[in-house]
Length: 72
Image 1: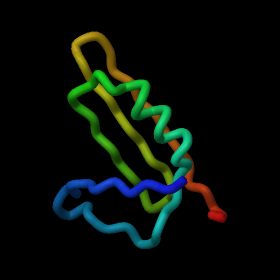
Image 2 (image 1 turned 90 degrees about the vertical axis):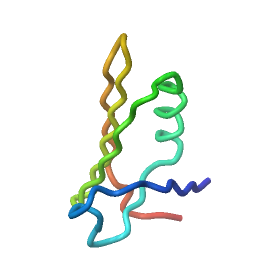
Image 3 (image 1 turned 90 degrees about the horizontal axis):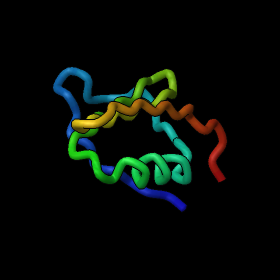
Image 4 (image 1 turned 30 degrees about the horizontal axis):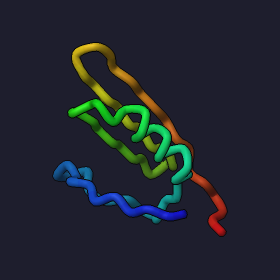
């Protein structure tokens, strides 16, 4: 029920002050629903918000996930 994603960070914006946890269930649904997109941007803020943006010729999609405070 956990996944790790390797991300290429933007220089100067490549560290977080703490470990953050997000719902793998919802992230999976977001990634599956946008499997046809070739361009995606994932951003994570220290305040616990994950933003994923997908772009293709037909549409742009934006998703936001909020940090899970307690992890089993």
